[in-house]
Length: 164
Ligand SMILES: [Zn+2]
Image (tube, rainbow, N blue to C red; front, side, top):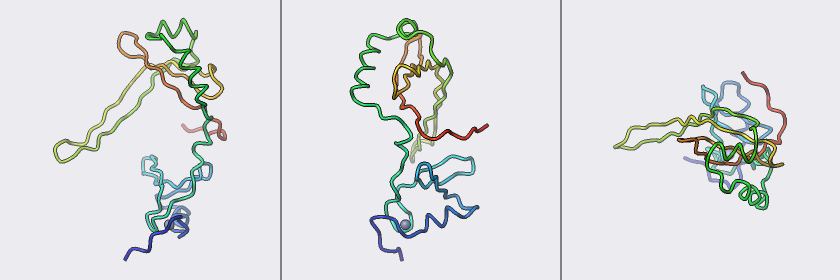
């Protein structure tokens, strides 16, 4: 029989599991998050304890990134008005801090008619790091040098371990 459901998890099951070296559940003290870690090193964040149903501790993930205020996003919105192509970007913002290729992956779970599938997006991306205190500005480049702007909160957490 399932145990009675709790509002806040205090059953200790996740905590104990996370301390077992062979267990796929891990606790990240920087983020204050429990994760399920796959063999390939991917993670799934745990929001509710699967044993007692209670909420797990509040994540500190958002405090790792600077907060972009509405006013700041409005300022950037005005800055990027009228920018449609790579040459528009270069004319307005100059040489980017990074001119790189970014790969993102989107998965589709599938159903009884469609097989599971996925796709990759490889895009040249121009990255500007010093236009704002709180965000980086990215322009991903599409067909005919058209650009799609996006913003990304700056990382302000502890230095990341260097991985290979
Ligand atoms: Zn629990």
